Amino acid sequence: MRYISTRGQAPALNFEDVLLAGLATDGGLYVPENLPRFTQEEIASWAGLPYHELAFRVMRPFVTGSIPDADFKKILEETYGVFSHNAVAPLRQLNGNEWVLELFHGPTLAFKDFALQLLGRLLDYVLEKRGERVVIVGATSGDTGSAAIEGCKHCENVDIFILHPHNRVSEVQRRQMTTIFGENIHNIAIEGNFDDCQEMVKASFADQSFLKGTRLVAVNSINWARIMAQIVYYFHAALQLGGPVRSVSFSVPTGNFGDIFAGYLARNMGLPINQLIVATNRNDILHRFMSGNQYVKETLHATLSPSMDIMVSSNFERLLFDLHGRNGAAIAGLMDTFKHGGGFSVEQERWTEARKLFDSLAVDDAQTCETIAEVFAQTGELLDPHTAIGVKAARECRRSLDIPMVILGTAHPVKFPEAVEKAGVGKALELPAHLSDLFERDERCTVLPNDLKAVQAFVSQHGNRGKPL
Ligand SMILES: *Cc1c(COP(=O)(O)O)cnc(C)c1O
Image 1: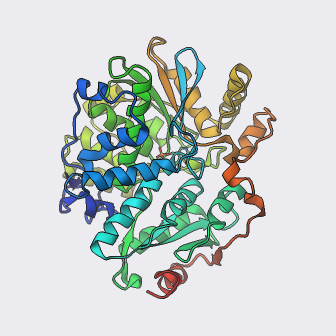
Image 2 (image 1 turned 30 degrees about the vertical axis):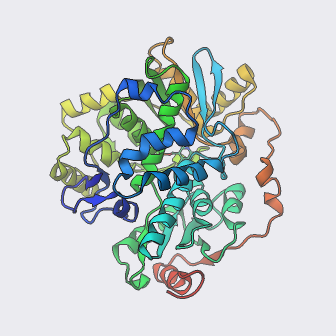
Image 3 (image 1 turned 90 degrees about the vertical axis):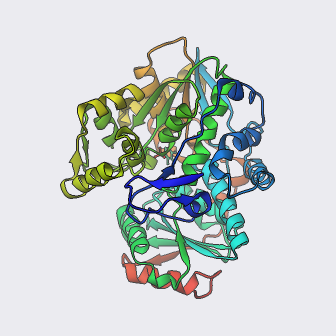
């Protein structure tokens, strides 16, 4: 499988190189040159497979030529073996023909484990083969950091540095990062906000001289391997509910357009999906595009669903590429307009095409709390605020009650006690067994000023299993 850039100017890469790349050299994102397509018979024959075996069948075409089947199978069995629920991604019924796909049974209780548990193992496998080491520098406002650290903590060939804004992540989220020790794990609290952290990561990709030749790898969802891993659970859910004979709909809480883009790919790979609903919080750039053809940057609002608090959706570029007939020059032009003017619209027929593919809704904090309370009253199930946004959007945008509606349950409610309290459902939340002593554990973290040079100096001092690069 070969991968090409959405801006058309970077060299095509194989899976191994895409795994180790950040942005393409032309500033674009990598996508498969040709998407694999499965027949209905093929998909039907996968019914009842354990999660890791289904994952093998869905992802195999993407890694062909880079990872032999037997090795890939082993990696997948290990990856999904660490999830605490035997079904890995179980479905829970909320209402007639309405289901939550619980994606929070991984080590850090959010769906990001599906991709980052795999990414860590893939990196180690590929680096071992090449005899190389890499450094990861990532920024997090919460869930990505802990999932990336959990995914890479056993990696022999990876040193991971996670930047979070000092005193601006929740205590659960901070402790999920700072209580994991290893000579290759480095938590840095920046005296600044999330955007400051992200800017430092971007600047480090642009000028890597501080790494003295060691390669820098991306862990946010611009990394193709993360999107790839998320395609699998759409197939998994649909197969449980009568797919591919029956078509299924999905409602997806999204900020960066990563998770929902994986659903779009699943549909293009042959899975019959009826509706794909983009569910955003008040930071609604995606909803404004879907409903009014305006892709325009606005100020950031802090919400009760912080993992979707973004101004710009980086993966949206991958959809735009398809909407523009995979014309890289057109995307480079649009992105340039966006960079300089803060927004754009697309041609009418391209927008009409997007409208056929997606429905959308923006849900504010008050509606989020109402939905948590409503679902608790109806079923006794406690939703996290991100999942609640998905449920609200599903109920508002649904076109047919005969078609199963699956809401992606992106996090465990225990991670977001503030929203649950505000919803007034007052159910005591307990951390799962593997995290029950989280608040008693020692923490390890370095506080650094909001200064790129200081951060880069720290990375080069500690980037080789705690020793200088
Ligand atoms: C990251 C995250 C999201 C948004 O994911 P996208 O890839 O932007 O769609 C939603 N919910 C939770 C809990 C998250 O951690």
